[in-house]
Image 1 (cartoon, helix red, strand yellow):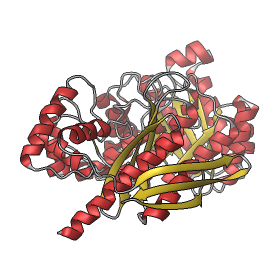
Image 2 (cartoon, one colour):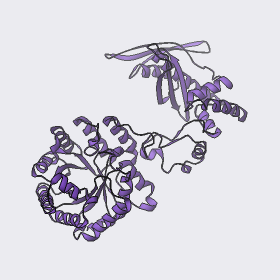
Image 3 (cartoon, one colour):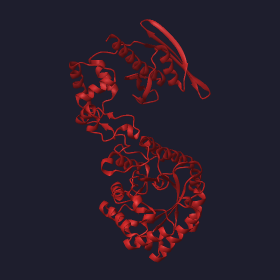
Image 4 (tube, one colour):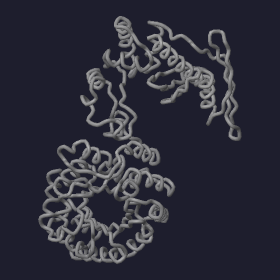
Length: 514
């Protein structure tokens, strides 16, 4: 059975964000936050949620208990030392789960036995066996981890594994607790365990790899290739010291390289980005821009060669689609390294159709500006175009805007627009003053724009700073941007939106002329 099950290609994803991940220095989640993350992990499709370490604190106990009684679908596990009190407390926390699991661990390496436990191999073995038996009397699903397994003597490790399986363990987890193992070494350890533990066919073999040497991913992959069928991981790679195997990295590696690896998971990969951002927000742990899969730069391109390739065929420089992990789209970042093709593409998105001579002129000014700035934004491009080529005609002109808003008031906007000396006035309510203004503009112009992006920045400093709003909207097949400024951010928002609407109106008129 173990060896047969280990031949199957489905990998069990055991998420320990709420236990090992929360042990990252500086992180503390309350019960409500843990429950919110657990709900998202269930939507993501993880097989197991290790919800916490119930004996560690009343708060952790309550969080595990709440998750166990609320979340349906995944197995809900609690961690426990090899002590009766720990195990019984763990069971109290997880027993209401649809599928409860008790995860028992004990240090087995010589450094852990001698320095922490101060016990002999014989004493450690007895504690491990007794702990699994106690847990087995409470629930069928028992996981056992010989902590620091990668630094444990092989013969003793095999003995502990075999005896805990005989005592009722259903999953055996092999932790590389301090990220010490090398990939070939760790893969060989998994293979030797399978070859030498007589009853290994009765359990699922799992691995838990830390990233102290940056090898958690490599070690986990070699373990899978050598027979492991569960990986323990965390969202964004959170965890003690340098963290754990990153859930998003292992899942997308298995998906992107299924031609070679031929393994599957139950993960809904389109929920990865959302899960990553939720965990990052609630833990306060910023996600590095160059983080694989979920970093802001993961699907961003600034090199001219890369941009040209992406615009011609995405596969030239992207091995997965942004949509496959929940990103909206790839980003072309305009810098001094960007080529003319990328600039033309961005101008087209902004609603500008330029001939070759016009594009050549714009590109000269673009390069001059790009040498002075890290990134050239849409408004910079628009300023160049409007200054050097032409000005977008103002089909509708803002004459007046008045808004009422407050905590006990329905936000309402009254807007007056002018078109060819004809004045139009209307009013509408919205979720906020900006939304009310946009709804009113939609009613007057007859153009309903879908707001894709909204950003506000202070152009100057001080309380009376000029606020600049940039919006990006879509209507049908047209996607355009608009920029507006004012010391009143509602007026700036309305001006930005109206400029974008004017572009859409002009694009539609061009299509009709054709």
